[in-house]
Length: 456
Image 1 (cartoon, rainbow, N blue to C red):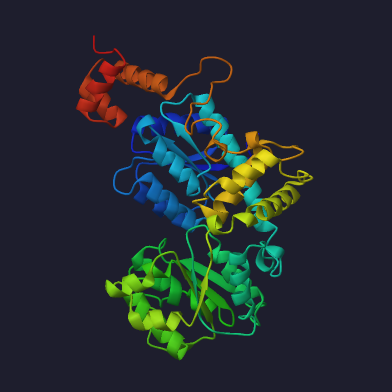
Image 2 (image 1 turned 90 degrees about the vertical axis):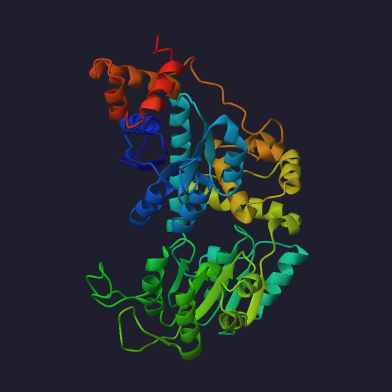
């Protein structure tokens, strides 16, 4: 059952697909927004928070995989389903490792669309419950660290030494390895725990807005500055700010950040007055900042100022013995927030598959796999291989088509033919006017008519 007007964002550069998918989901009860480019999608996500998004892999300009990363940086709990042609299945599978929940292979039956979106919505509801349940400052999501491997213990030993420190910390690690979790652990074990913990992803924010987000602006500082705005550092006074993907901070913002670190003062954009703040800065990145310094893309003086203490978060493939502990931890948490008893354990075959897998998406990917298994298989007594994705168990080829349910179903290809026929009927067979009505070129219209046997 779809909650009242759950929101779905659909991004595809083909008007026919946007129309057919949007029409289907709207009839099902969703509030649907359809857009044709990644850039439009990012603008929409800056203002809105849909429950589910469907991204085409092949888009003009920024592609769907790049859009996935930017979208998850803006809304980490967004549930994304990728849409791809057969030729880009490998890309779609990689996108799942990067945080997408699932993918649909075009042309897909519309009943598969229904199933994929229903599953995505279930995961979205679960994630929001998890987020809402973690609002208390000293929740275990902030304080508890799960692991027993040597690499994990080395990292925890470094964090233990930071409890009484107020020093700037540079957190290094691959995407999905848990850098934000480490930052929260540092904050909530410090003397600043009762003050704000605020964060921003420097790669996700457009350059012309980033400086305003960090330092605020005065009324009239630029065209849309209709009122004074308090920036992130001002709002976090007394607490901690995490600058994620610090390597993507523009040079102008780097200069202002360096001054803030050295003098604990800054100016709002368009302002002349000095504002003093007491903020601890944590910076995180998955890129080599030393290389960016050599390339002239990152200030050497800022790098040395940030690199007071360095914490390296190991990738999950270097701490395979922790996979079982973390899987059990995620099973307990997800089951609790779903209001269900957790599975009693993990079957031997499933554990072997989990520990043998390389986890390119790191802890984030493991969490998604466990969450997906418990939502799609409610009431299981233990986690078994059949509950895991194909790329982990290797029991079947990734990207194998999903059998249709209930016999033949209307596909996107059928819908496309129907739309072309209707457009030709409305325009009395005028192909130029029909193409314009559908938002495609005359050449594309001829090709699609030929494909569907309508040109005879």
